[in-house]
Image (cartoon, rainbow, N blue to C red):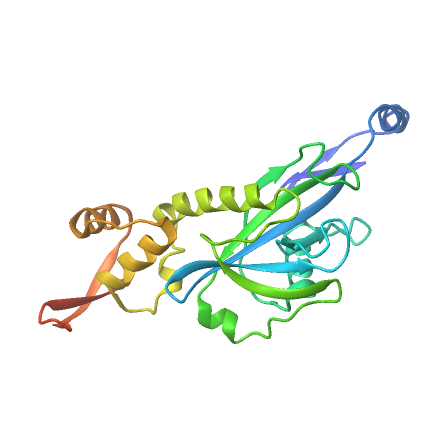
Length: 239
């Protein structure tokens, strides 16, 4: 058997004796179901918000939850493909970038059976979400945006997943370009700082904020114009 172990690298191996070993292990260890859960986040009404679905069927019927579902093993889905398919089926959102966050496998996280889930998150501009038709799928009662600081009772361990996603966001906003994706191509320092403050959930000192941004990102001054209160407003863009 030829196994692909990397880009352009093949390994020839004989697995003829492995089938018996696999049967023995299958008898000893039961397999778990695999799911994904997706946290779609945006800045809406000057707050960080997340899209939740209300479940139509048990378990946790009428509870809100993250969009997500079971990996289609027969279709050969990747985890990311499952995240996009389930999100589209349950919310109607078709186009979004998502990033893997963390895996969860506590034995009692799902009352139906042992289920291991991988969480994904997406932080998207509101205008790119608003132009899509967000609607509840067949197994969903309703979709609804909630401020992160005012979440309803949640199904499964989704409260923990969202809490962990927030921690990932707080790190990624300093170490990736996600904040700039929420802004127009040209922006002011105050607009950029406001995005950081909303995601981090706290006020930031202007001087320290600008210093940290300049240490991490390359910004170019486009123009300097008179601000609303007479102070100069510098317009910037990422380079």
